[in-house]
Length: 123
Figure (spheres, rainbow, N blue to C red):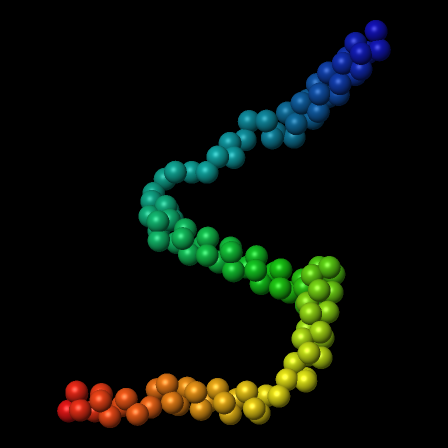
């Protein structure tokens, strides 16, 4: 009995809303897009891939902005924590020694004694 009363109330409300819609003149209005002319459908095959790329870029930029503004607080915390940890660890690395020996190894690898053989072979 209670369910039938609720169904009757819902039906009555729907009839009232339908009547209000008809009085407002919105029941017979055609809201479909017009298909006259070519429109932008011609450019769809060229613009749609660009639109997809822009969507992806916008989502990434929005996510990075949210991290920077601490709206994504969990990610912001971990980025900050890892940055501080790396800065403390990398402070104690002997960078002068590493740069000196890395540059020596690269120089020997690129310009070593075998360059004489390359010179003889090419010229």
